Length: 108
Image (cartoon, rainbow, N blue to C red):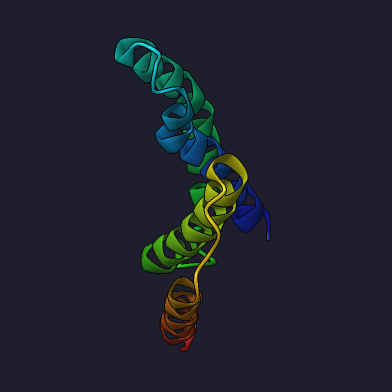
């Protein structure tokens, strides 16, 4: 559980670093790159311990699958909160397919 919580937190930082600057398109690109790097630094400081804590209990591949699923959920929430983009039915169906992928990845 510690690994998953840390991955969620790191994904919040990374999503802000990757997409938050889009709300400030009038700002200089170099400034936005520097701010994004500053936001991404804590992400790495959280991501590395998350993977270290989870490795051994999870395989590297399972850690990556967890990471990608969390990324999509966090991104969907951020897209809604920051940009007002609501999830569509086809996006929700694609999430169901991801749940299937997770099931098969963790199925002994």
